[in-house]
Figure (cartoon, one colour):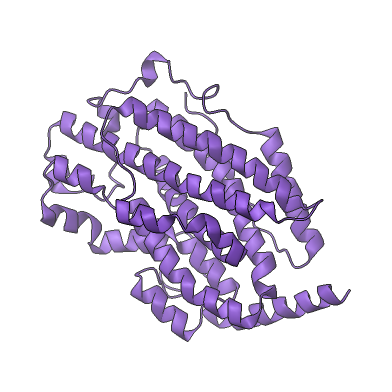
Length: 356
C-alpha cells in the first residue's frame, strides 16, 4: 500500500519562448490531470488495519534525514516518545500544508476570475483547485486521526497570510512565486525522505506519494507561467519582483521546515537541542537546498541582481552558482551572469509577439 509511484511525478521542464509552446505545456498538464488523479477517500486506505494511526507505533519515528531526528537527545528518548514526536511533526506539516493550500485555492480563484474566455490557464487552474481540495481533505483527515492538539501556523503569521489570496489582483507573478515558495520546500523534503529508504507508516507514505505526484504538475504550471510572463514584465515591476522574491522564499521555507512550538513545549525539548537541530550548518544547508530549484529559476529569469542577491544572502537561501554539490543538492545552477541576457532576450521576444 505505497500509493502512486513517484515515477509519475516528474516535472515538465521546457522552454516556453513563445505563446504556442507555453500553451502546449498547459494543455499537457490539463490532460495529465484528467488521465491520472486521486480521490482523498477512495484512494487512501483509511480503514485498512495496517493503516490505523497509533501514536506509539514505531513507524512514526523520525528518519535520520530529519534535523531533530538526527540529534542525540531525540535518539535517547524511549521509542514511544520518539514515535509520538514523529507523528506530531507529520501532522503539523499536514496542517500547515492544508492552510497553505487554502490560501492557494482562494488565490487561484482570484486569478481565474479575470481570465478571458478560451484561456488554457483557466482550465488548468480549475484542475489544480480540485486536486488541492483533495489534498486538504487528506491532510485534515490525517490530523483528525492523529488525536494530537495540532495548531498549524502561528497566529501572527496566519493573520499576515490572509493577504495572499488578494495578491493576484496586484501581481500574478508574485502570487506564483508564493505558490512555489510553499510547494517546493515540502516537495524537496518529501522526495528526500522517500529516497532515503526510511520505512514510513503506510498511511503517511500513500498520502506523501499522492501529494508528490500531483504537486509536480502544480509546480510545473507555476514555473512555466513565470518563464512565460516574467521576461515580458515592465522592467520596474520585474525589479520589484526580484527584490520581494528572496523574502517570500526565506519565510516560506522556514514555515515548512521549522519545529512546531507547541510540540517543543509539550515534550520539553531543550533549547540547545532545538538550536542544534534547526540552526546548525546542516539545518541552514537544508534551508538553502530546499529552494535550490527556485534559485535556479530566479537566476534564469533575471530576478537576481546585486541588491537582490544580498537579500537572498540575508535570508540564508543563497548558494553561489558553481558551488560544490552534495547528495542533497543535485541541481546544477546556471551562472548568474546569464540572467541579464535571459531577461533581455525574453523582453525582445515579448515585444515581437505583441507586434504580430
